Length: 45
Image 1 (tube, helix red, strand yellow):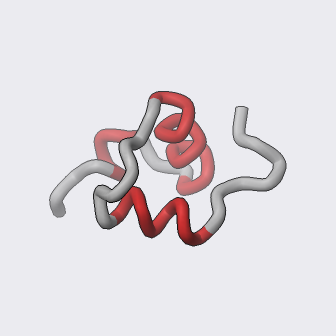
Image 2 (spheres, rainbow, N blue to C red):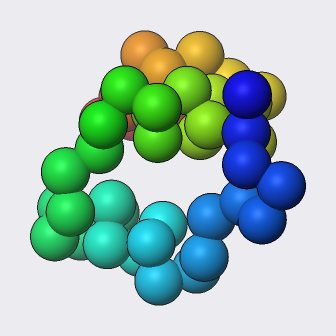
C-alpha cells in the first residue's frame, strides 16, 4: 500500500501544522509507516 518513496518531511510537517488535509490514502500510509492505528495517530495524548 505505501508508496516506495514514502512521505517527504515537508509533507509530514504540513499534516502536523494542519496546512494540508489528510486524505484516506495518506492516512493509510501513515498507519503503515508508524505501525499505529489511525485513532492513536490522531489522538491528542
